[in-house]
Length: 215
Image (cartoon, rainbow, N blue to C red):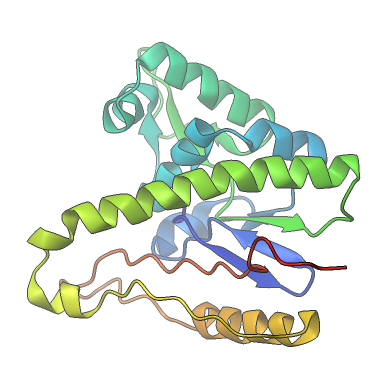
């Protein structure tokens, strides 16, 4: 997550930071998904908070200290961002692991949905601010994947792709393509018990090519 960092469109919703690889952990969560209010989205519209939420969703509960180490941050700043996530309902205390010396955090949901909003509204501003931060995180994952590509075993090099397609479509046809891709990815079953399995990120981004006249 962040998913874990992926974006998928389901009807008039966007499906953000889905993660189904930790099935036993996900089953223990109180809620499988959250559809944030515009106020909550504003709180989530920060790359550090998205990185933290993604790690908790992908790898399970952790302390601020361990998360800070993984992200190259100081523990004070990490604790602040975790408290903000908690205040807005995205993370909760892990009571089974916490103790008086160190606080453990876990994601409150496996998935975040956002509703597509009307442009020019306050809700749309919140949605766009959130997605802007999400794109920053997704691009970081892409860049890291390319940096590590040279040391990948050949089977994983062959099982990776960096591709794009450009089609001239109506909004309705573009929506149908997005829905079809989403359905395929939603039906993928994790191979959690296979020793050769690893986390694989699929990012779906579909957008009108910038710079076109849409009048």
